[in-house]
Image (cartoon, rainbow, N blue to C red; front, side, top):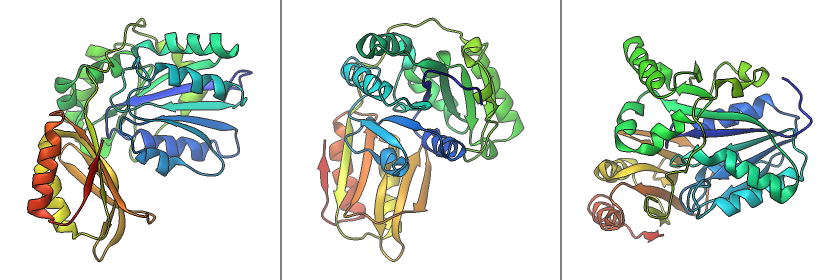
Length: 313
């Protein structure tokens, strides 16, 4: 890996569930022993991915309740970059929200430089492309288009879940939006990490522009708290009702007879993975239908689970 006097900064983007945290965990393993910082951004109040990433060797700042590229949190992001600059990290990784539009990232870095007096060695934007869901996501949101348009490296994740014909269609679509970015593929975070020795800025395509993230376009985020245990089948029945109206569900849940599990819902795919234990079960819902999701969650939960729970903004 090439050395740099200034902190090397990478920005990770990609829509909800594309695998940013999985890739970042692999990167942290590769950089074990190096001085690394993370700025981790979640759209909801509850920082699920921050819980997964956190360990004693990593300096991490979490910025939640919106996108770091939006005017609502841009100052927080600038201040976090300024504070991290004083730590003299070798590497700083920014994991943006899956709904983050990074079109203005270089403007924000310039603002951080003005505040801190220190300059980052900006190494580029890495955009993770979900091989299974990207085409559908692209039709739904301008954000997905912008993430790819403004990246220097596109990583096709979940390659093992699609065939070669689907992969070829996906690469063609990527090239329609960004003709020059480098493209690699990944399975569970395993990929070619040779980009650390490359100048990804050579793959610059789009000029900076105003982000589409704003208070007006910010999706409604709700999180659930539940004490006790629930049967997996009942939870699945509940989730299946909610799936059409959410971009993402994730969190930690205590399943009867199965213990604590990390829950991750992207598109129609529902994954459970054994996790550490927590004081209470918590799930985050990012809504496609605004505040109307609250009534939908209450009704589906009552019908399929029927135990006491709480919803919070």
